[in-house]
Image 1: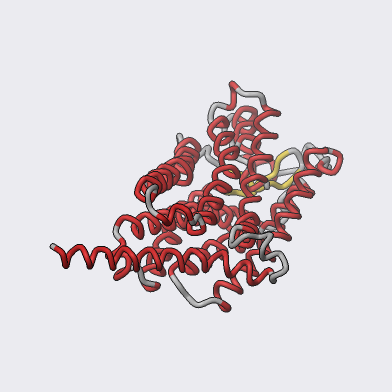
Image 2: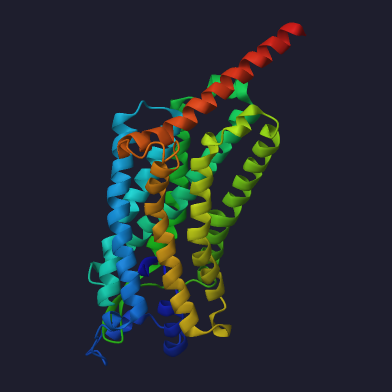
Length: 351
């Protein structure tokens, strides 16, 4: 996952040894070095290639299956709107993953300047759209539990589609810096796609910190607050004995946290690269980026296995299991909203 492996390798070395000059200046004249790939001789590199190929295969076909079922086989609901959008985000990510795999194998960028800017932007679009959608789903659960009457009357597919559109627009805006700062240049005899932050002071730090805050810290604080309040609200409610409405969402949030945390940690460490070991940062960024990519294939797996009891439904089809995983939440939330509305109605009658 070279697109998400940070800027240490492509910025720090150049700025230190070339005094901040644009790396593409090496294209002029004959290259001093002849590029030879060493990836296939490196155990870590080979392992990451195998992992990313598996992520591509599982994520591409798994998310395509989710899109097919939630988009064409299931009745359109608020819940299927959330999960369909999340699957589309992961599908796009996986569809462009081969570009990164080719770069890892060749240790060189061969797809030109436009794709150098376009492909990394799509990968960051996946990161932001995924976390924004998880926040939306968490807030949706919060509103359904805390304000059931309002949710019963206003929780519509049209509103859900509008909110999803806003989330995608915000994710696109947060992905723009990747397109702005990405450039193609030559280094050590090879063509590379790198982040050129040398023309804008503190731009590297601003981009890294903003991604960490907007794409990780703030969303998780919102998610944690929403779920904490929901748990407190429902701790004495019969619904707490039925964990179906929260199993899928909890698993999705946990998977996102585990997959993306190492990447963000090493990106922050990279800002002070002079005090950290070069090899540790390089390895950490590559492993962290691959873990982040794994999140895109985990989502459809969770849809399948987090529905009704897997052992009890082992003989049922994969399609049925996936449909149950997404439909269970809608049915249970609807029942809860109906009960809450009835209780509120009776209470108002007594008053």
